Length: 145
Image 1 (cartoon, helix red, strand yellow):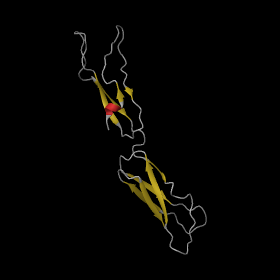
Image 2 (image 1 turned 45 degrees about the horizontal axis):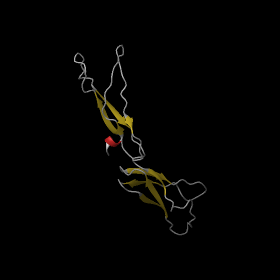
Image 3 (image 1 turned 180 degrees about the horizontal axis):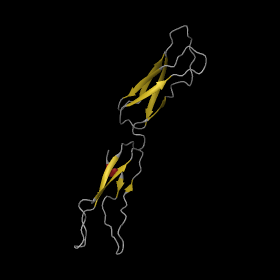
Image 4 (image 1 turned 90 degrees about the vertical axis):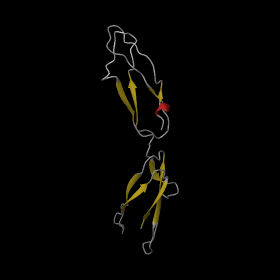
């Protein structure tokens, strides 16, 4: 990740007018659609033009953090190949395989908890489990027996 591609105008000069005690420094943040974790940069006061002025060396920098954005860990949903509903016979050992896909960011490992909830009179007692997407994984399957 390159913070330099996210900020525009990284150097400049400000003037604090007579009678004022502050000025505004503007740093433009460049929007993009690249999934990113939090990024931090610092704005530092380097020097003053007037010889009788000085910068407080204990308070000459400010840190700015650009929040995580564009879903760096991904967005999860059942894949298009997974049907909306299944019909199975209980007399046979039936396994329903559901695919979960990850779109967007692939930056980190993500663990998803799932639960099968009975919605009618059934022999299903509410199965739960975990599926782990490692960094870079885009498709995982879960089996409901």
